[in-house]
Length: 302
Ligand SMILES: Cc1cc2nc3c(=O)[nH]c(=O)nc-3n(C[C@H](O)[C@H](O)[C@H](O)COP(=O)(O)OP(=O)(O)OC[C@H]3O[C@@H](n4cnc5c(N)ncnc54)[C@H](O)[C@@H]3O)c2cc1C
Image: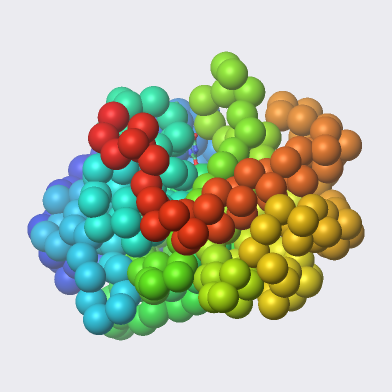
């Protein structure tokens, strides 16, 4: 039995949602296909009558500024993100996350929308977007709506977006402004190709040498993307230095309980890694605010 019969390349969102409606749940959205085609081949996703490829939709492969938001079309690839000077300056964590996704061949076709729609809590783009307080635009036959990023995730691999009827069209978040910066780090097996042992993203605002606001996202520590709210609260108002970061480790360890994964790492190992990632990532973000140097040279262009 073929994994799909028809393959459509719509040029507009209206055309794409019209096609999904016409197939009435028997078609599915595809973007880069780096997750979906494997899932179809390995039997993790059921065969469909049609694949609706959203990568040719006009506007879906654009990165733009709208007021103080950055809007990223769901069809934007990880390579586009890495190369975007706007994102290097104003969403550094996302650039660093996209930079480590797969290898160049994967990054050239894999999209940010696919990374999010696949709903794996430890996907690298997902962790960065979580710290950036992103929102997601979803289009269906009945119209478009913006929803908070976290409401999209129902469990590992379970998205609130029904990719047989709806399309994730764009992601948006506030650009990092004055006195703000973000950073992303991950720990990965050398031979690892897909998900990390752990990843971590931070966004911080520093005023008068103090942490005025901080967002910390880490994965995988829960079935859905996780924000370290207790650690964020602990750090708010503290001096922006490594003493404060080290002081927050106990809070971080009490609210994050990573589990053992047979393929990646034990829960105990991940507990050991958590303070390292906090120090590395938040330390890097604070340093960026202090120096004004938001983007390390290595990440500018591959
Ligand atoms: C070798 C290899 C290495 C990888 N390494 C990493 C890694 O280091 N880090 C990481 O996070 N991921 C990694 N991945 C996973 C994958 O590449 C990313 O998650 C990628 O961003 C998925 O995007 P895609 O466009 O290929 O999605 P697709 O495979 O096209 O789609 C994924 C899912 O999302 C749905 N979908 C896609 N776009 C939309 C949309 N616009 N609207 C609604 N539904 C949609 C599809 O129906 C499908 O269910 C790797 C994959 C491979 C094969």
